[in-house]
Image (cartoon, rainbow, N blue to C red; front, side):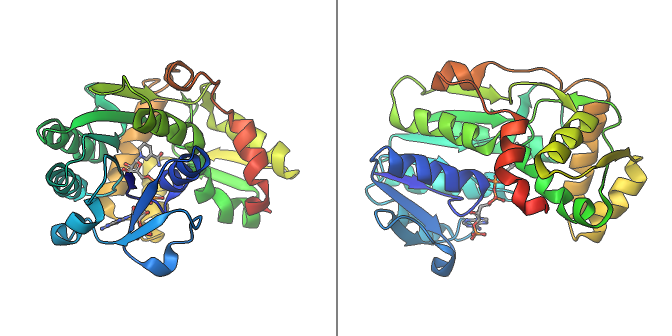
Length: 281
Ligand SMILES: NC(=O)c1ccc[n+]([C@@H]2O[C@H](COP(=O)([O-])OP(=O)(O)OC[C@H]3O[C@@H](n4cnc5c(N)ncnc54)[C@H](OP(=O)(O)O)[C@@H]3O)[C@@H](O)[C@H]2O)c1
């Protein structure tokens, strides 16, 4: 049985879908069972990564674990998860991490994941780290601007980066969870092409059938905008640092890893935009 954490989120939902489609016995850890709308074959365990004593029962009988967590507590959360999994007799943990761990580029998000990777290495479980760059689904943050102004404001200048479809991230995670040979490996992942914001906005505009304009903004304006949405300041600063790396051309490298691991070409931003166009209309 495979235990999936973060199962109600962007990547976790896709992981569960692929595991069920592949006929793998799957259990999800959820905080709120009312939000657990999964295939009826999926077993639901109620628990909270912030409450280590709720994890033992969830981990009982799990052979492999998918670890996903966010925010400043993620290393402690995933450390507790790994300990519970180890005690329950699990063999392998596959962690959703972030691109940049090991690269020398440091911000708070990279540091949280670096710390978590260290804890998993020390856990005694076999591990695989899946390290994606920016998700294509981050474009959902533009919905209000697109609907109300037909403009997308962002602090990336003319810098390029290769966003990745969450389903491709999930496909790599599921390969690592269900086929041999991924233990002790880290997989830095990107989408298939580096795109500037102007190109992403043009592709989205074609997909939704409405003219859109990319408006580059300075960090100060982006900071104000993100803080107004209630985003925690530490996350805002980390995202601004990443925007600086993008502007400096440090995030443009395309990685071949999705195809190497899954045997399939990664989905394009155009694929993502067509699939999700309705959300922007
Ligand atoms: N966005 C990007 O561009 C990007 C790029 C690289 C890496 N990442 C990494 O990807 C991860 C986020 O993935 P995502 O976007 O798929 O996540 P997400 O959609 O934000 O979902 C977060 C999941 O974690 C669960 N969760 C939160 N707190 C929990 C707790 N205390 N106990 C149990 N479950 C808890 C949530 O469950 P509830 O339903 O209970 O809320 C939800 O299922 C982060 O580690 C981030 O650093 C993101």
